[in-house]
Length: 303
Image (cartoon, rainbow, N blue to C red; front, side):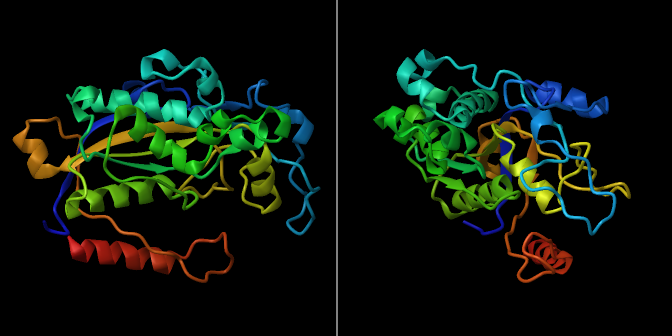
């Protein structure tokens, strides 16, 4: 198989702030609506950790405080039907909600690809999941007296992918990827490579994130990376930092030739992907535009 063989997106599903599925997400984008909001009270007491931005750039920020009370939050992230996936209520209660979201989203994405999920059981379908936070584990595993065997399988980055493979009986590569903000994109790159190399004939590529604590808000504020209004403003002169948000999305991928042969829907075609590291920039959290330009050029040449 060619290393540049096109890969097709044949199914998808997602849940994002202000959008319960792909249709609602598209509508939100087309209408230019804002999915961010104030931190829900059930997450944490936002005002307790809030500070105003320093009056001068050189002024130190008080430790343990965040400069924003906003972010992107999905509704009812804990809603789950364990019996549908053959999971006991006790096991479900010990599971990171990110695993539950990935199970639900993967099922719907496969159906969206005009495939019955049961038909993929026993196949070499791969699962590649980008995940960079496991705040649920920090909350659940702090009380040692309450830890059971279920908490072991219910937490951990690797289980995000393995949970999907196990319950859907998928036998291809199954792995979680943590490269910070690029995690889901790198998962997509690895999934595409697995299809091109013949490691699998179907691949699920996805990502998930849930905001359970203010820890990263505090870190971003202390590092001078957090937008006070909780909104990312890419390519804008008013861009002033990161806005945190949560959600889940899964794509079903196939080699384009196979998708066309089976007359599946094709949402998009991936001609090529690539991954690199910025190397040394002006700070470990700072991007390197030259490294990113080189990567784009390399991928462009390879396709």
